Figure 1 (cartoon, helix red, strand yellow):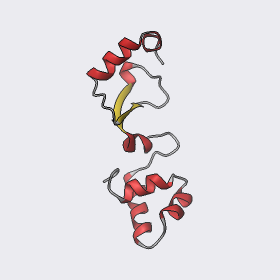
Figure 2 (figure 1 turned 60 degrees about the horizontal axis):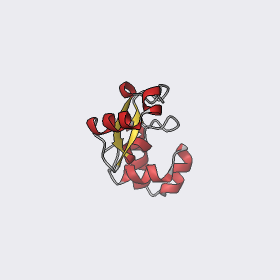
Figure 3 (figure 1 turned 90 degrees about the vertical axis):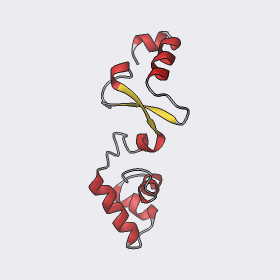
Length: 100
C-alpha cells in the first residue's frame, strides 16, 4: 500500500469517493503484481473481482467451456474441480453475472 494511503485514511477515502466507490464494490489492482496505489487501483463488483484473482484468470473461451460442460450435464462442482476454480465462479458464469 502506498505511504499516503497507509498514513492518511482521509486521503484514501477522498480517492475512493472520487473514483467510483460504492458499498457493493471492492478494490482491485489493475496490475496484480503492482501495489495498492491510486494509479493501479479501481473499484469493481465483487463478481468481477473474483474472476480477476491471479490464480483464476479466466478467458471467454474458458467461460464458454464451463457453460458447455454444465449444459451437457456436468455439475458446477465437477466443472470447478476439473478446471481448478471455485464453484461460485462456475455459478456466476452460468448465471450470466460474469463473462456474459
